Length: 85
Image 1 (cartoon, rainbow, N blue to C red):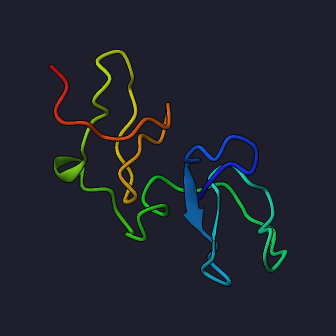
Image 2: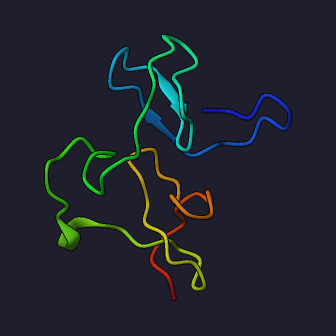
């Protein structure tokens, strides 16, 4: 999902109702209007349980986030550039 002002990449998720990409922290879907609840830890990836052994940590050595399915950190929004050194 792109920012309409700077064209930068924004963290996003799929709406559970219409499956369009929406802002990660959105309260309502901007396409179908469904009210969105808070995400459970495994819900963002579409899985019932989180498999911690398969997560990819953010490349930024100071960030605590993990890389989402679009290749961006879920905390800082930076793209994955390889393993943190």
